[in-house]
Picture 1 (cartoon, helix red, strand yellow):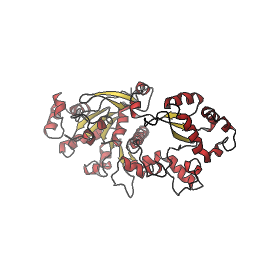
Picture 2 (picture 1 turned 180 degrees about the vertical axis):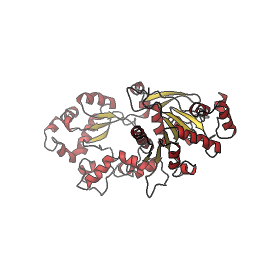
Picture 3 (picture 1 turned 45 degrees about the vertical axis):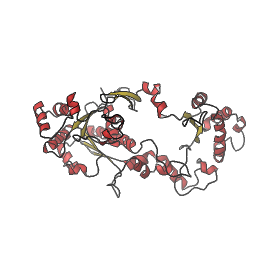
Picture 4 (picture 1 turned 120 degrees about the vertical axis):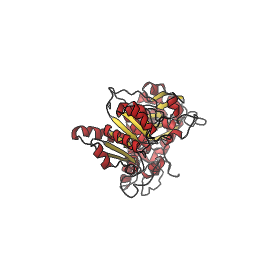
Length: 424
């Protein structure tokens, strides 16, 4: 039994934020029914294509464990199918532009009439207010949510991160909102609306920087490099390079081979509890008792000097040797791993964090598996659906149409099964 067995999700999402959410629900056992336009489907099916004639990795890696049905929502019979899906499903997830569902005839009020227990979950760029109708993509969300202004180095421009905190991060937030609403429904018997604006999700992930904004009003941020360099702070939380975001100073340092390997680096934290061990490892035992170095507060204006000395040591070791030496001593370090190294990591493959999936058109490919592990709800990652692959299956098994009625709906133009699937 899976955690969400029996839950049916009507998936109106596309691109990344919504599909991330519904894929998680599918991994946990929900029956995710992805509604797509006949002949086109999710736009990402044909974006960044690397294998001619096959769905892109962009699509396949975000749509595992789902079924696909193609419905012409402008067709009268197509709307009939949608109404039956709304009555049948537990959750509707969408990331359309504002007002799109209303124009289709499926406003929140109409959905409640059809199914009072329905949970309607939405991703939007911004929450209610001045910018609620604006179109938002990943990097826009990072900028509007506070991430970009605090990422990068002080003497450079704002920088967006390679982690998809705007899209996938919002999808994670929305999934939590959905399962919470499902739990509440068990007691209330009612559905509700769940909204996850991308700006809000990014801000939630930037809370330590909002913390620093408030601390800055009381004085300089002493754990930031610029304090030790004697550079005055402005009015807003600055970009801090690779300084640690926590209370323990940390930096990314070069390791052996950095001249030719762009990822020959390690993250090194000078945690107060292991300061003496750090001193011994780098060959500076006198720093353990030396005035100005012995106590954490005394070291804040010397972080550049301290990390420069640590880097002299890390440059004599590979990033993995640094791990091997420091971990037994409880010194917090971590190698900078490339995606190539991560893809080959046997440990991540063993836990299902990296999975190999076989696809009928593109063959085997690597993908990210479920990042959340549950002892009683193991996850099996299944391939993404071909466009309209499960149309007849959903019409008959989920909605109760006969085979003859399903064929009639196709003839009427309400649904479509793409020829490549029919040929199979």
